[in-house]
Length: 136
Ligand code: GCU
Image 1: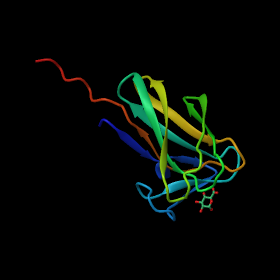
Image 2: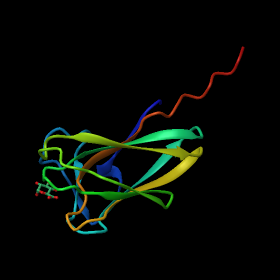
Image 3: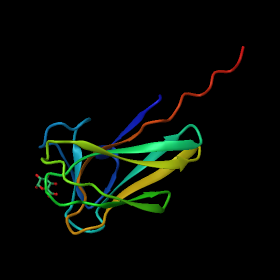
Image 4: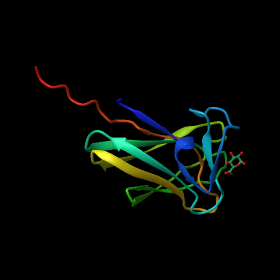
């Protein structure tokens, strides 16, 4: 498929719970991070082509305070801000573009402030591509 959606409720959680009390999520729910530094969601992803990929995180933050997270791709960290979306039912996306080799990758989103992470709905890897067709 050209795009793969990894639902947060199916990912591995550390200090967070799956909930479904705020509408607008995809799948069956979202992860409500515990309000602590270090709460985390980890996705195991697969990419079929070595190239740059958009990692699109869908989230809601109903507070007025940023909930920055450290996004690690196979352990390499980047800090990404997850600012207010205005309401817990208002979902937005945040994109991080990274080079991924072909194969399996571990992508972990860890809260870096005492508020914990935002509510996390999914990670979509947006610009994966179909395998090229063989020539006739
Ligand atoms: C509220 C909200 C939760 C959210 C939490 C938070 O309790 O209902 O969905 O996760 O605030 O501040 O993290």
